[in-house]
Length: 378
Image (cartoon, rainbow, N blue to C red):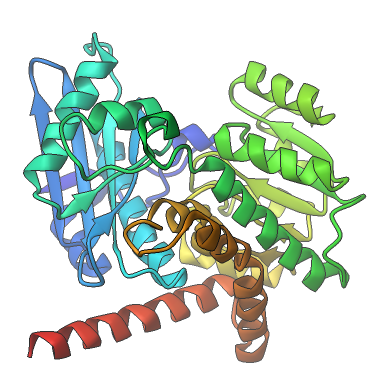
């Protein structure tokens, strides 16, 4: 099976296609990146068009959120699922959690008449996998959607607290990002104080808005942007921020650039435009390519790897599976500060980019997990 691949022609995060070849051999891609399974489901009645990518289940049950988004093409949806599921594997490994990575996308299209029926149908798909895959909130979905999925399967997280679930993980994800930014500030400026620092936040959705709150409370000076102007203006009103348009956010003179929208926004077109000392935010797959992490490093910009800094949400959502209390999971999320400080030291010692150090640590953990699994099976 081959898919067309487009060149990246825009820095708009809604067009996060970063592949540079004209065609993509899907099985070759899965082999090279270690993916196990790609699942498609079309439900004529509800209009569901869903893709689930399971990257690696060897560390444990594969978990990943479900994204509800309009894509320019079905190929883009497939690529999104594949890349995001791989990132989830590294996120769990980097956080020391015994789960594999997965991700689901539901293609939003005009033929869908009932959001509820689409998510009920998706819940039946999750249930059909018999516990191989568990899902939760992601871009375009919310706790209420998780409650609908839960009517069809128990393999779902992030159900509203009023219904006995974990609730929205976004504030916890933002807390981890805030702790990571503090670690970055200490490295770049010798102090982790946020007061007086300028932080440019790209994306004012759930995570971006909560991150703005944490930073504002500590005296940070905020500049924000969002593709939805109303969302940016509301965040600015709440937290005394300056609003710029989505194209200008890359060129804001700031101490920290915090990507909290969609992925693949750090590339050879945007990195030269950055005027910051640190990049750290809640978005997944911020780098369009591995070389972009090295480009940031060579420019002297401290990159706080996405799957490390934004792991707070999965730490919190899986606390029940791991026999941890909510309070213990909050402390684990705060520990992202120390994880990143350690990662920065490794980067300096090994003379490699922080992105490379993060992958090295995650892959080492995965290799240990696979070795342990092999011994258990023997």
